[in-house]
Image (cartoon, rainbow, N blue to C red; front, top):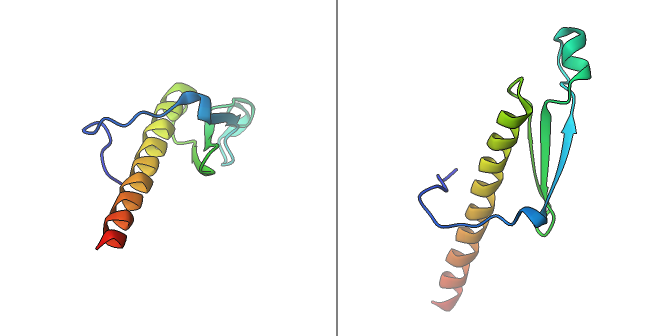
Length: 88
């Protein structure tokens, strides 16, 4: 995935739906009752990103946003490349 920090790409938070989820792996009672996992869905494109790596919901949310932003940026780049190819 491309690094999006280098490019001016805005992700509108109004277009993103966030759900929290409990860990699905073994980890004792604490892992099953804390909602640390994050699922982000970009409503216009239907792109979904789910992260449950960290024990912190904030860290998972930041990682998920970065990945979603990179995916949406790649979709835009692919769309522009296709338009340029079609013009040729």
